[in-house]
Image (tube, rainbow, N blue to C red; front, side):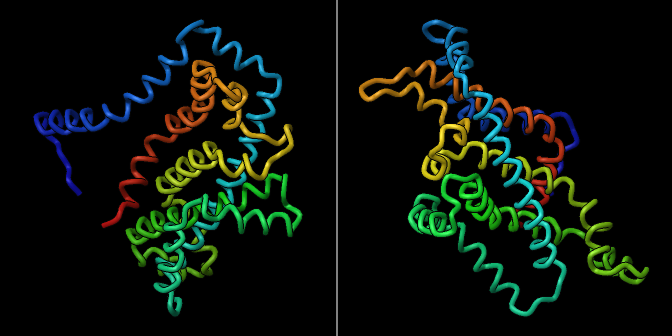
Length: 262
């Protein structure tokens, strides 16, 4: 891995990183500026005045937390199997799993709708949680598997020789060493599940089940829309993600670099 220690090199790297970040900052700055256009802080007051807003936040939190738990557990177990266990044909299974990455969410709406109505899950959180988790797992397994490849097999062998079974070796040896990639998985899953718009729009029809991403639709009319209120709602929606990233930033960067493709 490239490592720069002297200040001229650090300055160059910082300058390059800043230049690369600028194009991504423009949309964020424009969003925040647009949210204050017109009546300023009153745009936020109007959005916060929506009576169901706390319910929307709660619903999004329930969905995001459930997806994170499911994705984290499945990802770590699957990555451990693909990286450290001898399983006949595991490479074939791994590439089949990665093939799911080529399937966009919108293509799956019809079969998911048919499945949800058949199983009686339509208009329930599970109709959103399960597909969201399934769509996240392939990419997170890819990251976690590469990260686990960097953990020496001798550590697991030593635990087994000390009398630990496979589950104990996984829980007491592997899991404590995977906090960085775990933080990465949590952040990426939170962003994708919190920001998802299509699945809640299609599968959650009751007003008390709607999520925070549907709040901007309250300011969209048949012939016009209030862009300032929409942008204010978008800023409020992004706050939990920003706070989560700031809290886990150190682990997120280490996990993302450790799980990157070699």
